[in-house]
Length: 243
View 1 (cartoon, one colour):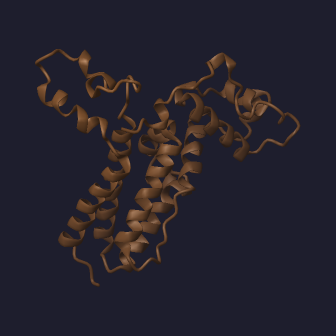
View 2 (cartoon, rainbow, N blue to C red; view 1 turned 180 degrees about the vertical axis):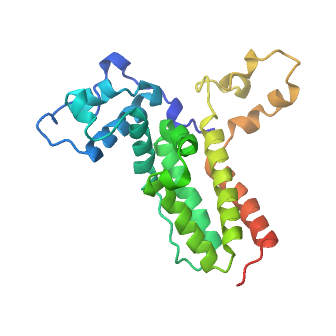
């Protein structure tokens, strides 16, 4: 099993760290992009709970009031962080092979999730706090582009929306599952010990303990492809398009 980036140990303790943008920027102009980049780096390093407006101001090298000129509050910062990650997800709506394009989008989404594992909760849950039309355009753009891809392939608008929901529902579940595949003791050769299953009451979880070798051999990329095979084949068979 490959341990996800979120669970790899950092050789430096928190008090030894320097925020990535805390040095050498005091004389540079502060922009919304600068603030959001600093916020993303803080979250990548220590998680969403570690982000505060004061720490963000320290990272940018400015008084907190300067930060508020560019983002109204912490909620706006979180929305902006989700926005700059979603900006990296592109959809080729002109691709004549809709299934292959959705597979490419799925792989790219997984790559972004593994690059920014501590941001994943924002990608999955943050949009729920905002009506669709009020979300950042970078968050809404993949939906529009996928609708264009699918309707261009001959699906009705309603079916295209259904396919989008099915695909991204699967993707959200997949990345959350993959990031939960945590190894307690990487140095152990016994899968039960590596996964911490020895801590469960003996005799109460026989099936789970018996699957320890399978759990330890988890391959996120292979699981993604297997799920997409099932999903896309099923969609093509049950939702006919004009082409």
